[in-house]
Length: 357
Ligand SMILES: *Cc1c(COP(=O)(O)O)cnc(C)c1O
Image 1 (cartoon, rainbow, N blue to C red):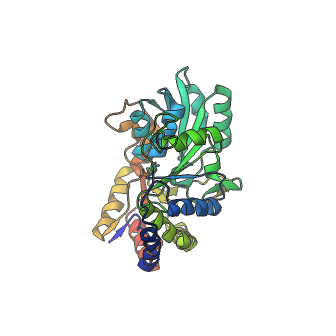
Image 2: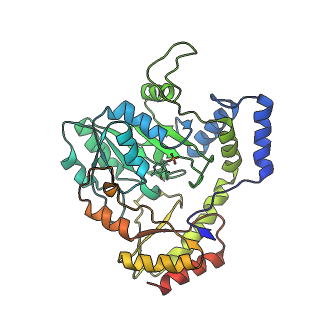
Image 3: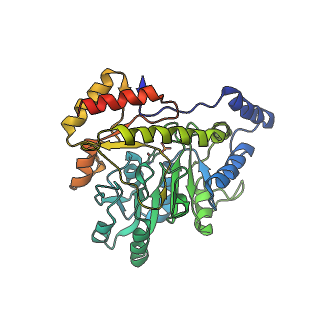
């Protein structure tokens, strides 16, 4: 069976060697030695100025929205994982959708200004599939209107834009280390913020607001990652370059052999050093997509309809028409992509797709 992705399992001895340290320390959570070490290693690997690792990639979105969204209207993309919109609602803010660009699949920055009202507090945009939003323009608009910018950069591990980590942009950026993501700790995530005062608020918010054992800076929640998760991260990280190189090969094969007279794929923004995190293809019609999906499923190959439905169509959300996002959501399929795909598997996937268009 071939799924859309395959979680990387480090050699078990390497994981056990990390666990050995946890047993030696007899310390399981509350920012132990392995968490601190993983943060330092990630800081160096990603070349970022600040990082706080967390128990998943959703809690940092919630914390950022709590601190910066302040119950207001949040301008956001309808083409993302449901966590992006759900976090907005969970923090009692209101999502205001702005449609996406049909080539880049990121929020259409030219439509943002029209969506701003006196209640708008922030923009929450997703660098979808690791493709950066139009960061310069979003920054300019935010600056002009006094808005905060939060990037859901869940897909962006290792992505750089204009020569620096994409996590360095925005007031806050977040990442996910879920098992299906490029770099993982089983469950986990991170938050990046270069404003020291805001990072301090994020830091205490992720630990119940504690200021020492008996005092509190303010309201908080539990966003802490454990030593067991950090152990997995420390065991996975040394393999990451090899994982990315293997994925790059698969993407190269897809690009050279799929029938792009019929299909299209996401256009990468210029000056992006991408991470090969997802390989989306866009069909001409949903019927064509369903035909190809069935042919693949019949051979035990399971691509995923990332992202379907367009988030304005999720039942609990007030719907506003988002024609491009809806059309892309109906016709996009993420093809299998992992370190473990063999050339024969990729060839079979391509043959089945091209034969069923
Ligand atoms: C995976 C993902 C998240 C949530 O991350 P978790 O670590 O699963 O909480 C948020 N946004 C996007 C775009 C994602 O793909």
